[in-house]
Image 1 (cartoon, one colour):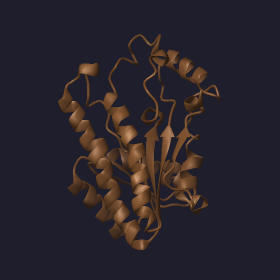
Image 2 (spheres, one colour; image 1 turned 60 degrees about the horizontal axis):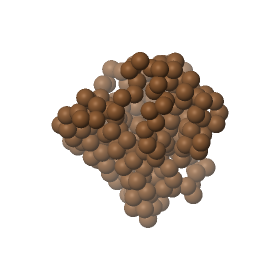
Image 3 (cartoon, one colour; image 1 turned 180 degrees about the vertical axis):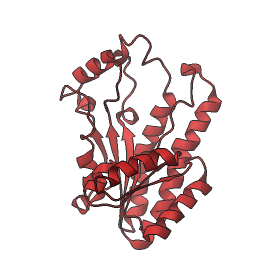
Image 4 (cartoon, helix red, strand yellow; image 1 turned 30 degrees about the horizontal axis):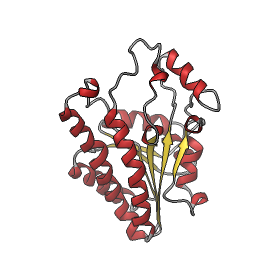
Length: 238
């Protein structure tokens, strides 16, 4: 997504908790002639979020597009009966933190009367868990953990509609991509099962999200807001 927006001519700031990782990737893209900078912030800490926002505004004067792709997983462990302390911590990052980031950067868009917010959701925010996808993985994938992720992504899809309603009065759009089946070296049994469950018969590669992100960031989608768009190879329609 970072590369796609930069290829389309945007100045992109990529940020998460670790500055070094972001700056390393940004440097690789700068070697290709793209305008990308690395930064960092802690999504569980509003002060950190606001400080990051202020650095961006001071450096560039405005924010045209916000892509909410940050997520922290693995805090809620132990399966269905896992420790609720981890569940609560994950909600602070992925629920409250999402709101804090959107409100912080959305304020600049609101004042300027334009902008696009793109939330990166999941088919897991629309559908239930399908244990059949994890058969044959030998426990490497599956189980009954991850309830917090389903919760967060379902909430993200709904708050997208809330943001679209609020920010729409200021000319700012908010949409969400419900991604599914993004290849990340998963167990071969999962890859085969998920591929068969899609209309296109495969998982997504690194290029499959680029076009839709650029579309939502650009004026080509100027009359699209409040949408939760599936990008899952047709998994959600079968």
